[in-house]
Amino acid sequence: MSIMRIPIVSALALASVVAGCTANEGDDAKIQEARLPVVDDQRDDLILTWFASGGAQTGTSVSDVPAEHRKEVRVQDPTIPPEEAVPSLVFIANLTKPGPGGKYKVAVVSRELYNDRRRVAAAMTAGAPGIGDVPPIRLGPDGKPQLIMYATTTCPVCVGARRWLLDEGIPYTEKDVGRDRVAAAELAQKGKAQGISTGGVPVFDIGGRLVPGFDKSIIKKLLASSAPADPPPARPVAPISI
Image (cartoon, rainbow, N blue to C red; front, side, top):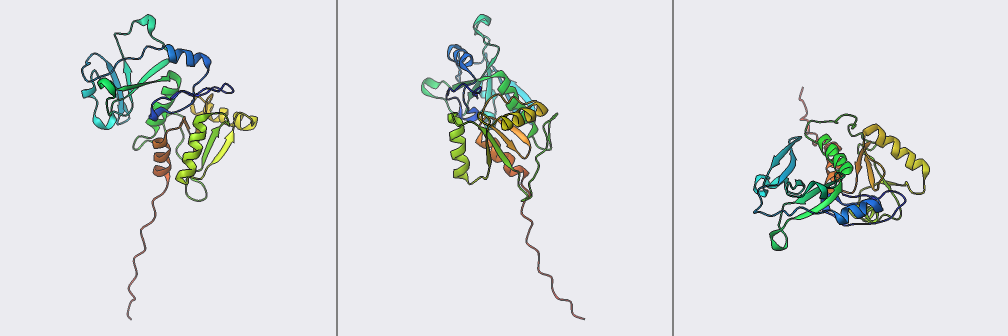
């Protein structure tokens, strides 16, 4: 996902798993000029990285990646000359289904944001209440995590996120970090504490845990995994005869 640096406004559609607004004009230029790796079922010289069971796994061909982990796979292409590489960018491929010509879709994200996303994903692994300074989910008075969306009125991805939250009936509080200095400072303080980049939008606070960018699956998983299950109905107690 690429995100927008406030106050510069720009948008670039990437893979659905990493949706967002672009970081700034300089990042836009790097993304547009970056040489994308070609990924198809015939190549066996790539470095593919995916995460399973809280750890990184690697392979050299699409067939090496388990079907359940093909939606978001990092791609490194050794055939791209070093002088054409952009260290600040990371390539992410969706290997679930090839496109025209048998090529898989490849998206470009910033390395900083990629590292943030992996950190959030690691904190969501089974049995891990938090990684490093990533806090466990806190529940509100209603027994559910409170959701805050830090956004701006000019970010198109924020518009889509806002519409999705309303369609899903998910209650949330929105704070405009472009116009509200207090909200911007609040977000920056939270990001510093959790080691999460907060220079872009949207950023979600779900029960105290920050999630950069708009990812429906992560939002739903955090909301669902942290909500307590409904207690089973009480069994009727038979009267006791004396």
